[in-house]
Image (tube, rainbow, N blue to C red; front, top):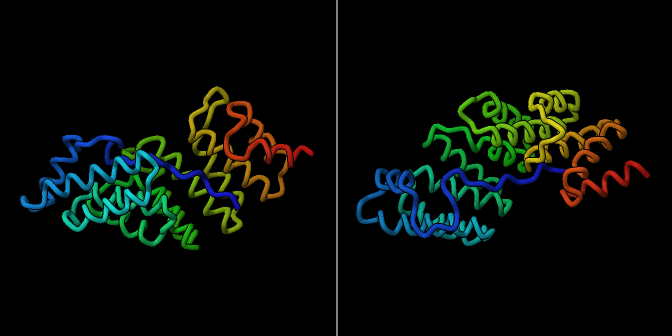
Length: 228
């Protein structure tokens, strides 16, 4: 069973920076004791930088150190959750990302929370979490698209193919678009159509991907298998 590609952009800040952006520094200042502030900032910056270099283990290590000093900083819990997510530690990621949502009041990582629930074999719980993000205008468009992808995949996990396809139709795309999340929408739609016994329609979705990027995912191989 294909899962949607993992979103990889922490909203906490840009990776690869040795110092924290002002907004993060201010949040940390309010959530950390003065004597711990400098060390917490250093560990959080290192965790973000590690994520930017695809070093999830390093990010988790630094994030855990930051959490020990600043457990009520939402950015710390977000970055640590992202690190655990990339490591496939679904339960740990779920705990941290739920804490991020509670502390920040934001739903922009709901798609990852929902995907963790899928990873834990709880697709029925993933759907309403993803729906919250889809309906929230404050959530960035890319995160809303990712939430639609996860909701559709979770519905497909339960064999609810018509509902899964209906969720994806709520995120319209254009043929001249080639954003990464657009390709993922097409890929998941193709996967669901194939699983629903609609191979010709599935092939058309994979063909759309190949026209934009012949090396994306395994779309070319799946198209060849369906066309053979």
